[in-house]
Length: 486
Image (tube, rainbow, N blue to C red; front, side, top):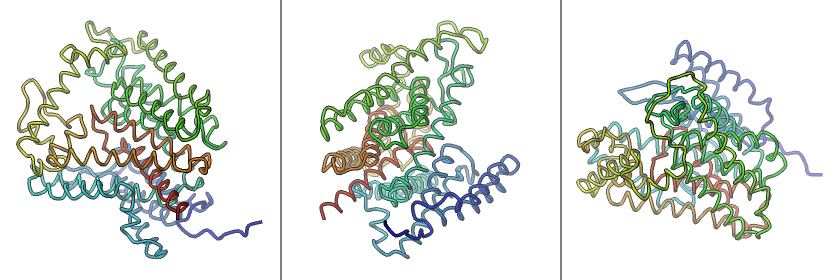
């Protein structure tokens, strides 16, 4: 029998009693925000600091739950969420653990991922873009946001390695918030709760949950789907229970009722390439009903269900005559072949033209990270309202950061994919069921992000969280590979 180890603060496997009271304080603070946002945020922060000291994985789980919600304050026209403060607390806690343990340098702990080179270039370009930024405040806030996402959150998630007990609350939190947003999105779709600009099938509304944009909602759910699929197909027993099935069904419905063509295509690409990697890493027998049913059959059934519900008026509203139906798969194909026939595709082309113009006029340092929206307001394309983003990651970074921004986008994504495949295929049979499942799910999430970001930009609060957890899992897989080789 192994001797029982003493659990230190911040370590994995902390018993639930140790963070019960901090969670209760956070819950009280959340309730107080309905009376006073400032008071509620202060109480939440007190409980969160206590929680981070007790259990960093649990603190990360709470961050995952809070991240989609715009709960916070606006300072000088810039909104700061409670989740931003949570990231600061996690960063300080990780710094404290680093000083105490001293096993690795701060650089290794925060920037030691397999993709550190393109990430470092991205941050350097972002800082340099302040020299030509159209809005220095916006660019500074955006830099801090990128540090929160790609440095702090990824480093905190990777801190526990691939320990199942540490990942359980994080995966549980991700599924919980995905389920809650999915149910709200389904309610929006069924009862036409939302702007009429998003009407589909005449009687319904494209779901956007709390993201304010259907493509962002669809992108978030599409990045959660590979993780749920991989855990169902290859994960340990605890990950194959009813709650993962519920999450898979609700997430599949959400991808469809967002009517985001980018999310549709991204989901298909993720499932396909996950199958390819699983086949190459192990053998063809792993692609069986455990993978096919949740990965292929459930999404097809979800599409059929939403299409049938789309023909039923549950809101008692007046039919919107002449509104184009976007629920047909054929519209995705025809819009690609004939862009002029589809309004959304036509608008995308104009936005991309505007982004290319920004890149042409500011080729070296761009207009500042996050500055494309400001550029769009100052130099609008004919028949196009000011674009909040370039609807393309590479053109967005090109407009914001110059030519090197485009190169960085391609480099960092290539690095993500390469690291994920290497971590899975190399000595894959030595991986536990959880390690293989979380690694394969992370790979699928990365593929979903890359494919969808050809037509959208998913780097935003809440939306990007599944990607950050995926990057942490890939980093942990790379560390495990080095340890075994060494």
